[in-house]
Amino acid sequence: MDFGLQQRVALITGGSRGIGRAIALALAGQGVNIAFCGRTRETLDQTAADIRALGVKAWPVEADVSRLEDIQRFVRQAQAAAGRIDILVNNAVTSLSAPFDEQTDENWCYHINVKLMAYIRCAREVLPPMKAQGWGRIVNIGGMTARITAPLRVTNGIVNAGVANFTKQFSGHVAAHNITVNCVHPGATVTERMQGGFKRRAKDANVSLDEIERQSIAEIPMGRLIQPEDIAQVALFFCSPMADIVTGQSIAVDGGSATSVNY
Image (cartoon, rainbow, N blue to C red; front, side, top):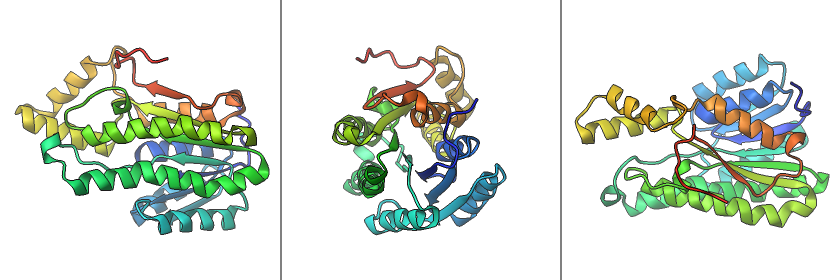
């Protein structure tokens, strides 16, 4: 299926692994050239090779999005190389799976800075070129803890709720420039970070990792964990002409596990 994105340029934070990598490959498969950042050169180079194998350009940039200067350098280098910026996917995140009493001020501040503030800063940096061309798509990845409570993910909940609120606030600010801003809430998605959380749960409950995985699957009505590619397909929709008039929305990709009703 042609999503009408040929020769567009996407910037993706945390694009070398997990959900970010899946989104990069999904967009590349639609003819989108990809600039992406991460902190590990080896995974950056491997993902760049996989993107280029799909027949598009890739520009990997080593950057830490907790630092404003790295974000500005990433956007500046991407725009210089590609000549334009059409899509921003805010995806980079890091967090500590631990209960409230173990979360220090440093944990809180770092999580807020590396995700919520990084999303805000990246959006601010790409806004001038998007406004100048009268077209843009911004997709924020914010986990399901924006809508639910989770004992080992308390910082995630606060930060992801902020991402959802920022999505709605910013969408109204930029709508007149034909820029849409939407959010995807991944459920229990098979990534390295999820495995870290599973290991902590298994340790606290004194059960096996397999048992924690079985428990997690049992909580998902559709009977399986979420794959990064599941998230990528929704991000692809938000970037495509099919979502031209969709903005300020947050959609869960969780296999039906959340029980809250959201309007």
